[in-house]
Image (cartoon, rainbow, N blue to C red; front, side, top):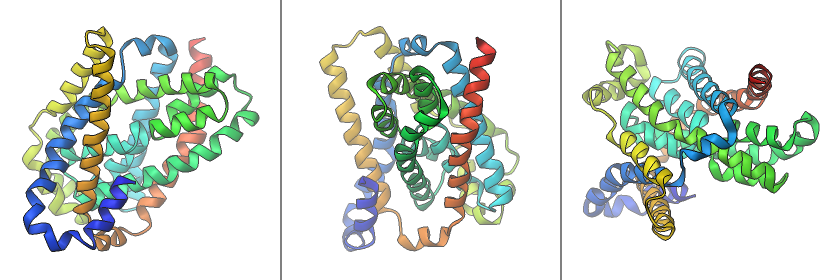
Length: 311
């Protein structure tokens, strides 16, 4: 919603005051974004891993890796999207929605409209999952625990996971949230691996293709940079796991983090031109729809396979 309001303002009111507010907007979509990602770590703890066991870890790892790889391959080879857009949509679908898209942007150096397109796909198909998943519980024949793991490992956003889980039962919601937060914790190692892979690419301009030549060249300037915010994200999660901070302070940090991420999304929207989104066409939606089908159908198969294998 915040990014949508930002896009509306960015294409109506913002151009008139851009010269006086540009510095603050750019600060919000860069520094405040990274700070918000770091503070996101205070929402989860390492102890949550134990509640779903190795089964949940393996399922999440497979879903993150396969969803992202499928996104990059299909996006660039089948749908002819540039590599950056494919990666952003893949990250959002694979890990934790808009937060993952925005965390991936500093590494792939995607333009504002590409980030907005990726976030939009997460909102669309994540919202769709909220309505589709609860009826699936009746037909799939899974236990409440198994369905919670399935929902948490395949639905895009944390809020969407909560909504879908509560539509079945509080037990499903609890398991789903834990599984989802475990998936969120994989954001940091994902960013580190992505940064390392970007630094080994011989020529981003050639790899990304004609549609992303300029953006990829821009991304080469930052390839050697370690995503410090990913490391601090892990540190924040570790600190939260040790419960060294008062619960009231952690709650305040989470509220402050929500504010920072909202400001970053609004700023991103302000820097997004509607013409650029229209120019993207239906291909990003087709890619996101394909990933949605994989998450639901392929995710169910992976959940069953891993559960049977580890038990």
